Picture (cartoon, rainbow, N blue to C red):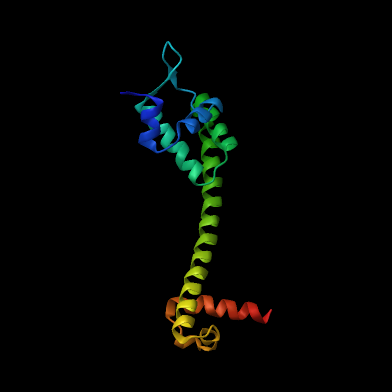
Length: 151
């Protein structure tokens, strides 16, 4: 099946300008054009664009996506290099996820803290609670923040 840039834009919820940019940057090397020069997207292109969007969402740079694209064009002799690229990026993403998870835990704690302070009518109240008086899922953050105050 064939799609126009507008159909692909709607299907993937990606602006047509972004698709044009990807094409100009060489990220769509297999893309065909009509006699009039319009981009013609096939089902395989949709899958490729889905992958590009996934990589962008994970923070992979256009430069690295372009390098990957070039490796794919070269063929199977680049399998090791492609695998290395994805292993490296996966490790970076796992590190970021861990950092984000820790930040989320702090935000959850702060929500609990201010809800508790609001109910008590004072921001000092949650600080004075002993660890066993704090909900279990909040204790770790409370203890960590208390340790940081000692530094």
